[in-house]
Length: 215
Image 1 (tube, rainbow, N blue to C red):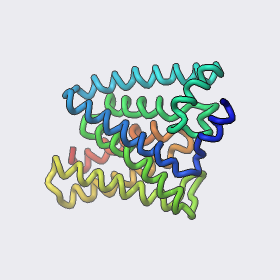
Image 2 (spheres, one colour):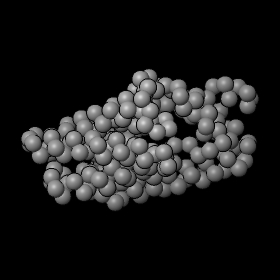
Image 3 (cartoon, rainbow, N blue to C red):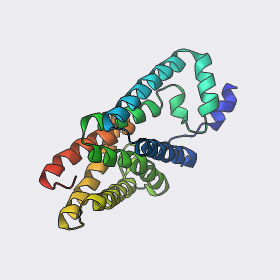
Image 4 (cartoon, rainbow, N blue to C red):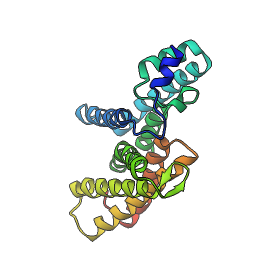
């Protein structure tokens, strides 16, 4: 059983497309539920906080009890990396990052920072693995950063256009937001990017929103 699981877990250096689709799909489903049920940001934030804490309990349990770890790996192996066999997976940080953003920042900025998490993380990773020849730091490349910047910039401009008439203010806001999203992803060298992207992006977007009040 252990050998079979080991052979099916992907490495960080692999595209692992199903994980990226899972990453985007779960995020979009969460936002859809939030929108359809017309929940308040604090309500959704508290739900995700509880979910994140529960996920952490499961993670610590599987890492301390091999039987639980075997069961979790058996069912979650399409979405997990080899490195997560003996360390925390990204899911608890995904839920906690979104929760903190919803609880700390204004609703519009929190949603935008979560959109950064949903799309920028997997897309920048995809392009970084495929074309990332120019390394900046460990597992981070110029090509991946450019892809992440373009995703965050585009998301901000499109999302901002829904609330604010497109113009120079929105353009500048979007460019700076793209840089903020990129930097927040680079900070994941120290802390999981599922946590750094929504939290640091939300903080940065809040600051620049005082200068260019888009949201």
